[in-house]
Image 1 (cartoon, one colour):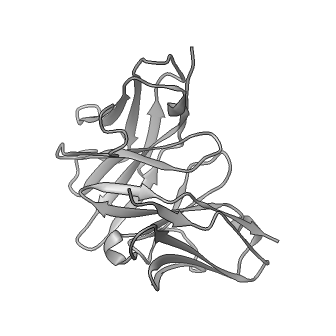
Image 2: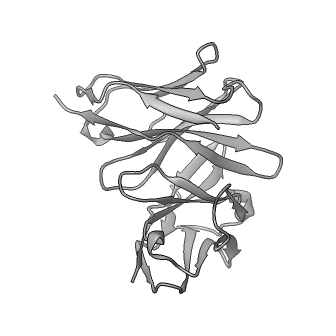
Image 3: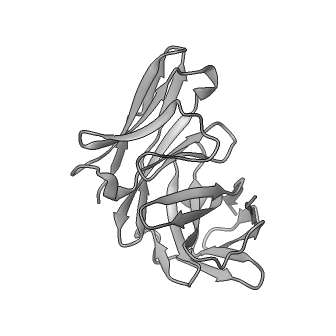
Length: 122
Length: 110
């Protein structure tokens, strides 16, 4: 069974770069039809799609975050990562990694990590 | 910017049926938006219930169903149970690789 696990610092200073890694186990990150992505949830608020990366390398980002976000894949480590620059307190959230499987007529966010809380504070 | 709309809250009696909706601030939702629905309880990661309008995810009971109702996507829970009390989110595909979540619906079973 596929498992995703987020890791990274739980505390980031304002104006610095938030960096998280999602480690994939139980399956290959390099398979066809897979989109690996990040979703966040500020405390007490709703979910926000950050972006994703196709296993072939194409990236898609939330327009409101696009200037600050980079998502990349390391197939040798079966990991993908999130970098969010110039963070502020508004970026404090639980960050989830996920997989979306896209087939001919369906697309399914079929796997989620457990989430990791990142707090932006000096 | 198009906003994805959901009822902020809803209540249902145990054993009852409830339909939650997912709409657009401008325009109609169709299957080409590939609506998905997620259930989330406090402190837990979201759980995917429905994908691509009406595809039920693995292990999801068949009392959860998805559809297009009028100009919205809909999640119907038939025979509501106490442990269905959760937050429910929808997400829609806006094209160009972009996805947008709705604000979520807090469902109370009482």
